[in-house]
Image (cartoon, helix red, strand yellow):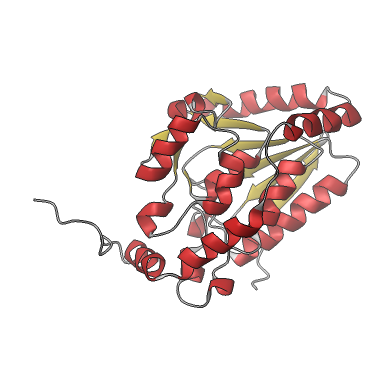
Length: 256
């Protein structure tokens, strides 16, 4: 695993800002990024000085999903999906509020990170897509956090089509809480964090537990097996190859 830092952490004013900092590969969920993000989250949750957590990013892209360069070839255990449920669960069950700030595209697993958060602030130019089916994959793991958050008929269409959708559609469908102009994101984020840190820590934790108790438990076992199987499948490997080679996958019909 690389020792380069691809996740940055800063703590100020009771807020731990965890920044995905791997713009060269569009903040893809590489092994290094997953490990460092998990460590940063665990440290923030253990720090009594931290009252809330912000998940931010450098570069144009919030997160492009799993690192497809790492996912090419190998067995299902080597596809890079096994650790991802723990990341989503850390955010989902965190007793401290977690705020995602999305300033650009979020795709596949990146949308899962967004959906696991308590509050999502998105720039009006941000975009989203459940791109898995177009790569021969299944959005299995992220479904555990996406389905409780989004309006059923909206997520049904978007997961089946893999279409890119904008911040307004994401807000209407329940994925995004607040849409702000690109130059207003920081001010809106500051307002949300001020409101969250005004709450008493134990009361906030218990309120979040109460809210999550009304939603399904995250049962990742079967979802993980399904996701890993498709990453290693013939369709999955062809989809990954076509994406990296910038060509249509073999299953895409020829257009007249």
